[in-house]
Image 1 (cartoon, helix red, strand yellow):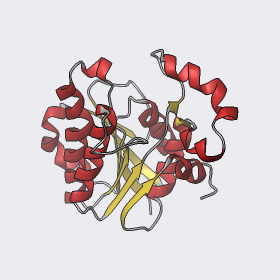
Image 2 (image 1 turned 135 degrees about the vertical axis):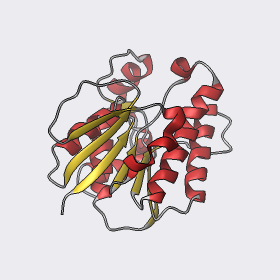
Image 3 (image 1 turned 90 degrees about the vertical axis):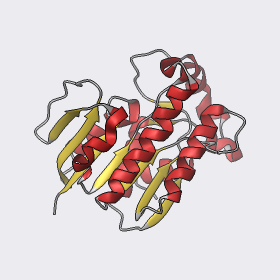
Length: 218
């Protein structure tokens, strides 16, 4: 039995990798992506929907799939204000989860290491509030992925990644191994693998868990 998947955030690092992965996965015969602007990505299985995320609830019918993969996320540099950042990283994600619940779809979401609603850091606090809001919905199936620094090709330059990558292999060992960066492909693999599990309830994967399941040794 083949399945249908819906991806939010397909233009991002993990979302784009996941889109390619699912398009080549025989378990799925339809891959729907919700985007602000066309990605001009062509594949026989892919169906692109250019939408207004501020009116996400208007697209409820598009959530009538088996698995919803939420890879939404922005940066303060792009969002420009805390309010705009919160809207993308919390409000849009929560609304997507509600729509997935209506259609009894699994919900898989990318969060972040350090997510904590009580964190002194705004980014981590928003991610923590997002996780808390999702768990309050009591979704039938919820997978939360908390990667460390994400690696992979980006069109934009990020100094932090160029600094961390060369030293992480030998510096982040032992108890510090959980801080090692996760490659976007590994996160995408982990999400795809988790979607095929028969678990129910809420499951949270740390960066170490992501490495294991993403490389097939979980």
